[in-house]
Image (tube, rainbow, N blue to C red; front, side, top):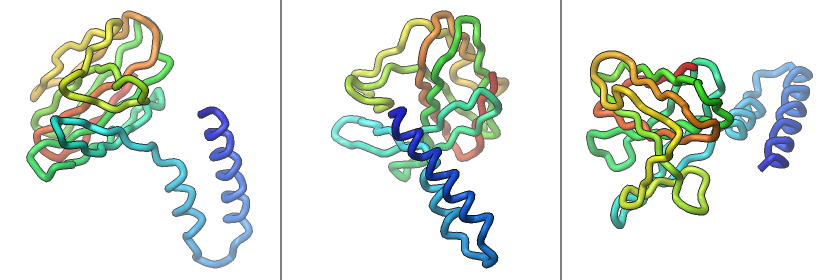
Length: 164
């Protein structure tokens, strides 16, 4: 994974250097750069159905969490992956949607962030307050340092963001 990040970083530098030399309005390099820097998704397994949902990597500052409506129903899902959190860190989730919920989970065995509803486990080391909210923010207080995944569920479209 570290080598992949180094390759993506190097490719980004090369693309940006090439963009500076161009005199035309060719946006292909920019599109390639955006494609390469997108976070991959996670699989959400519910019964016999599997849906791809977006993963957003927490940057340590205000981060907008991407969500999608994978089954065409009323619910929007997304995953926030927060690595390197320290004991005492507090993540504050806010939304423009009328309702949303936040839940920490342990990824399906052997995966980075896949969720299996029938076997989802809640990790120790994090406490969530106001986890299902229509008024006010939801907070996640880290009690044990580590890497955490959070499943975001919204009943309607709208932005969800997180700050530390």
